[in-house]
Length: 109
Image 1 (cartoon, helix red, strand yellow):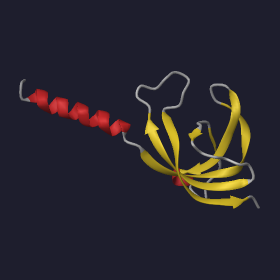
Image 2 (tube, helix red, strand yellow; image 1 turned 60 degrees about the horizontal axis):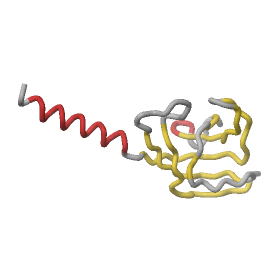
Image 3 (tube, helix red, strand yellow; image 1 turned 60 degrees about the vertical axis):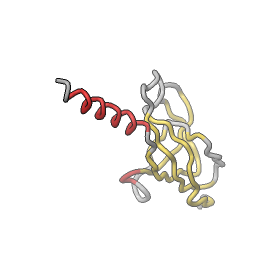
């Protein structure tokens, strides 16, 4: 039993560190927001991300993007840092999104 304790402690510490590490994710943000209802009625970004980037369908993005200076009328290609909340507060998304880098800002066609 004693030889298992250091292994379990190491495994636990590694998992905690891994959850706190930010992931860089690329988002294509549409030129306008739309009314949506998540936990409350609000306005959401329309984004393409993951497998839908850049040619997929626009989807609702319910979270705020901290530090993102959004102006309607432009399509933004941005990178964000995605950080998992631990623990997840009630009525808040699982992840925090923090603006990292502007790739491009294009006027809407």
